[in-house]
Image (cartoon, rainbow over all chains, first blue to last red; front, side, top):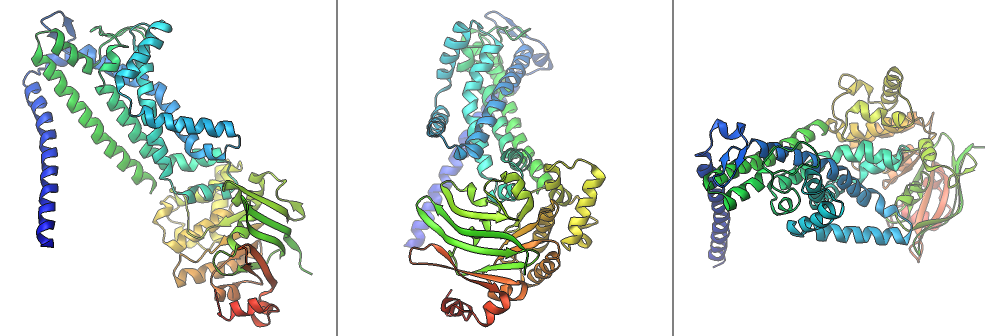
Length: 282
Length: 255
């Protein structure tokens, strides 16, 4: 009897697992197969020409995506990693009750913000950066709004990575007369770097794939941005524009295929990074 | 008359309202090995960690009474400076995930030594003193984690020596090691006491009897606060203890 239950249970889990994998494979497979049918070398080297027919390739959108990711990470990484380090390494040392309340609020905020839909960050970005600060639809607005989106993610992954560093390292360093800062900088951060990097790369993937937030902050110009105040169109946005506002659905699919492959490559690189970094230190 | 390196008087430690150490009066002689023995939870590790103020890492800890190092109050001193003078070796070997060389030179670098040849010299000296040099001299750039447990612990001793402390605190330094590695650490302690004052916490009474010159026996009272029951030369504590509880503990009637 128990054996039958066991077998039945295993079968259910196995089926659930296989179904999940099949769904994922069919989505990715469909997009990649459909999309790659329309990809030619020209597709990467020409820029979209605008208009209803959706002619041209994706060159400017690739460039815009790279700009956007770099700009966003430049803003979000120092703030996110810094906040994570503060919360794990320093917050408990705070003596004043006000600081304690503040860090408790920050922790709650981080938890909550990590689950807020990206369009909310988009609306916030539109209200603050695009209109109030008068940055317009631009790389600057988009990078700032994107930072708001990923900072909670970076804070959380940084916190997790730091918490995984054994306290015995910290004790060892402090006992040698190192200050808290020296301990964090020379012992804790190097041990946590692979986890932190993972968070940053995951966030970069998020920026590559988010659409709604950039719809209302980056605008949609298909030209290559020439300054921080230029509007632009990331690849994900391009997929949306091609699908909804042109007749070139096949090109939308092709762009999506490139996007999917890019995200897969980024996720694979996470494994490689953490393996390499780990090998270097342990 | 022994020269006194560390001295506590009426020293108590509290975790918030809980008294963990109760009015400890103790004089630890210089260049000797002093062992703290007693059952689990008697406060011997807490007392040990008082001397380099590691207890301050725990929120809600406060102290009463005084602890003097060479006659000056350790609580008035800059904690970084204090820990340079009072090194520590932990229960589990805790080398950093860096190379052997970087582990030994970590302390000196922190304290401002930049010169490469000077660092190399400190590294060699410290490893020689910690009886590890011959085993690692051909692989100083290997990760410290590749060493055996006993070697890692000797590396941690070398790391502590490298900042030239006056005192080395050892918190059950051999409890995670096999018997052969344990003997090596004990022999090492014997040579180290010529240059350093060593205070060791141990669970193992034979170890205390083998290595230490002085022994302090700690025990919790009815309120679970750690008290020092008896202090004296190791030979006297182990042969003719004056307190009934010391005798009971040493003869294995409890603990």
